[in-house]
Structures are given as structure tokens and as C-alpha cells.
Length: 279
Image (cartoon, rainbow, N blue to C red):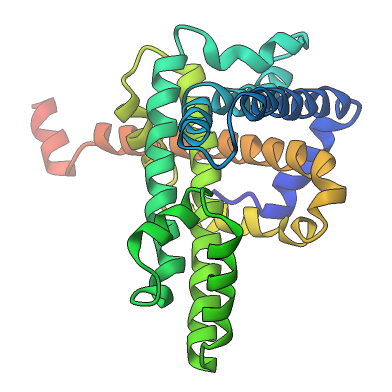
């Protein structure tokens, strides 16, 4: 794929010109629904209670996650000249997509959880596994955070550099996984009849030789994340559109390679063989 990161972002901005309001509306609606569901849980349970944590996890795994795929769907609908409707935010709940997206979200969650363990390598032996799991799943209290802060204060410079390196590594993995599963979402929308494992394998085949470019695309937005509280309404639709444009280029590149392979397979092996066929 010869298309540069700058070109992909230019195409994304051009596509969004005059269409920024729609993805922002989808994004804000997602935040409002998430806030409403969380407020209902808080009104019913103590935020530190096991039932609250359990129900919040179930909501994230089986309900809220699908709203992200509704946002991912918007760039595809824009390129397909589909009329905008707020209902497209709920396309992930469609019976043709939902089960497959649940499986993909579960795989994504497992991979993110495993990769987040990297960050806690410097704390092995200083925190027990129950504390580490509490931090990973956001069920820890202020006491545990204070203990974590005191441990970090006692780290040597080598430990601090190792922790920083692991945080950066986890961040890179996170960016790649976020983009990868957005791409697999498009594969689901276009080929809903296939099993979930097919989308993971297909996504990896599409990205073969292009992981570095995908990471560069994600990192090109990194400076805006430092001002996320002020830029997220503009940043998220822009990044999602850029990844969709990247996906379109991946498909085009894959089709070209497939055609080249097919043409090569049709080419006679040797001139002598062609001559013997004529005889």
C-alpha cells in the first residue's frame, strides 16, 4: 500500500467536510447513554460493591460496546451515500452482527487485559495478584492507589525507566488493537454470514505487511490526546474516518495482490511447454 499517512488523513478530512455534526452526535449520544446506565447502577448499588462491578462489566461486555461499532459504521455509511440516522448508532445490535461483534469484543478485551499485565511487571513481589487484578479492573479503592504511589516513590531510576518503557509498549499495543478491531468491525458489516474467527484471520491477512503503517497512522494523532478533554469531539470522528480510509486502501492493495497472483498463475511456465501444447 503506497498511500501515505498524510494522504489518508487528507481523504478523511475531505470526507468529513460538511459532515462533522453527524459523528459528533453519535459520539455524544454514546456518552449520554453510558452515563445514564452508570447513574442507574450507582443509584442502586454502592460503587465499591461487587454487584455494581459485576453489572457494570456485563453492561460493557454485552451492551455499551456495541455503541462503539455504531460509531465505526458511520464512515462506511458516508462513503456508501447512506442517509444519516441516529439509529445507525444501534446497528451493532442487529441480529446479523451482534453475536459476531460480542465475540470480537471478548477477544479484544482478553488481549487488552493480557497486554495490560505488562505495566504491572515492576510491581510483582510488591503487590499481590488480588491487588493487581483490582487495579486492572478498576475496582480498587484510594488506599490501594496510595500504596501504589508509595511503591513508585521507592523505585530506582532503572525501575522507573522500565515502568515508562512498559507503559509506552502497552500504549502502542492498545492503539494497534483499537484500530484492528475497528477494521474487523467493517469486515463483519460487509460479510456478516461468516464466523467470528474468520474476521480475525481476514483482518490479519489484510494487515500483513501494513502493521507499521497502521501504527504510524495512530501515532499521528498522539499529540491531540494530550488535550483530549478539549479535542475528543473532533479527534474521535477524525481518527475513526482515517482508519476506515486506511481499511479501504488495505482492501484495494489486497485485491491488486490477488489479481497479480491470479495472472501469474495463468502465465505458461515455459516456452517449450507452450510449443508442445500447440503441437
